[in-house]
Image (tube, rainbow, N blue to C red):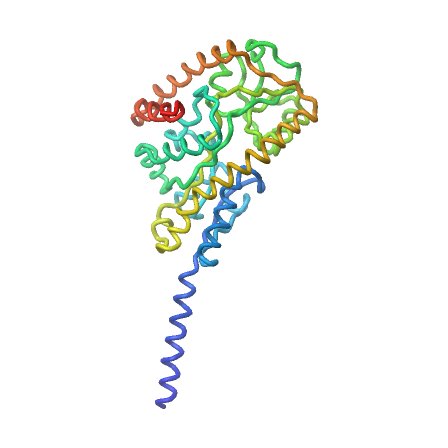
Length: 335
């Protein structure tokens, strides 16, 4: 009887150790969309680093569209449907108004590495943190993108007045400026951009290089811009705050401590591979290159000023928009 009791106690102790081992292993679900591409390499690299640093005890399970629709990722984070997600702020500007400040047309030619730094600083701003906290979300890292440029069908433009009537798929800041020139903001799903250009639903799309490559706009376009410099989209990676807070210290350190390395990899990969591929693609397809003159750039910047001011005024009742704008503008100015 005593031997049986000893055996039972030993089994219970062993089960306890096994249980502890199971609890130590952590898996997070990560909601992305589309397919793996330059735009998601920051998350892919982060997953690789976290698993390596924790010897497989903490894994990020990345799903491309299997967990949520892209425009519902922030909602999914809010109620813990998954622990990590990527989204674009212009998908639902009313849900995350503070970070749309980074999408304003600051009319600066900014390197991708500097965009990364700017977004990280803005993400730390108390107004931004408070805004995302409403969704139980903590901003983990940006998905920095180069300044957006246009690929379009039809005759190449020769003046800014030629934007009049052009139906463009693009984010708010850029379209705020082009709209003042008569361009028409036209929304179509990302996956339908090439088809929409081909059929004439839209005339042009404003994207970063990776998205032009992903949608093949250059295969139906006739011209493209090189220096629009009216901003890009902000598509951050966020985590569920409760999930982040519940991580054991070693796993939390592995996650947070891998962000900068993941971003460095992303920037190098984007600049050396994606941008080069895009430039080669538009040249191979024979698209006409449109480079705006200093005078045209000055006119675009003048229009951009009114768009920036409009953003400040439209959000003044929600938060201290002037303060957040000034902070962000100083970052873009390199101050």
